[in-house]
Amino acid sequence: MPAMSRRNVLRVLGGGAMVGLAGCSRSQADPVSPTDNGSGEPGSVLQSLSFDLGDLVIGLPEDHGVSQISLVEPDGTVFASVNPDFAATTVRMAIADPEIGDTDYVHYTPGVHELVAKVGDETERQPIELLPEVSITGIRLNGGGERLLDSGKVVVQIENRGSAPTWAHDITFEEAPNWTVDTPISDFPGIPFIGGVPIESVVIPPQGRQEYVSTAAPAVFDEATSVECAGEEFVFRISVGIATGEVLSTSVRLTAEGNPGTGTTGGRFVCDSSRIEVLDG
Image (cartoon, rainbow, N blue to C red; front, side):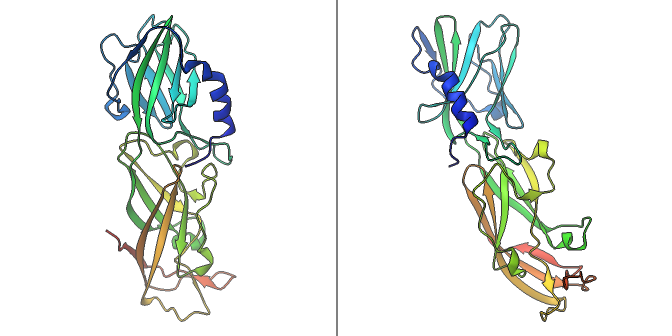
């Protein structure tokens, strides 16, 4: 699992008073799934739960009287706290923020959390399930790009059938035809080594999917090899790093077909009609 970021530590310090609040406490026993829009129980101040990219959006009634809402992780630590305006009926809490280009990313720990709302002298608690369920649902060769060798990259589709958002941060290869791209998964989920996705939509929402383009090009050949684009086959593995710490991996077969594209100054080329297929599952 990713370590708690500096930003989260500040949130813990700012919201720690929410744990063990004095006064009466109301609790709803069954965890809410935000993918079902999380409609609250009658009388609850937490009326609805949904997601907007990596933000948890909490709907509140008018004149709600809520002074603070905290998200408590499965281990009992406070992940984040917000102080809603008394006139606001919607409050947002960032729970999955890649902060592109920075190691100080934000990501919850998968599991059953608890939303804790302070309402006057009372405390309302609502279990909430934050469990992404991601899988590779498609792999294809990149259809083109500004540079010739862009067509040697792969596009990986990731689907999230879980109840909370996350994102993919790296695509790596093992025993690829272009051996120079064989690298381990990055340890920095906040610095995605991927392309093809706008920064503002890199997060995969629950019940959503996203396509990522690899930065490396495994389907590239060197003019010194014996590849003639005549149906040569290559089996290798593709791995995708997820911000939760999970790594998805699958074997693929690349068939080099068509005509060798115009070679680059480095003596490399791609076969213009190559195809790729998933072998696992």
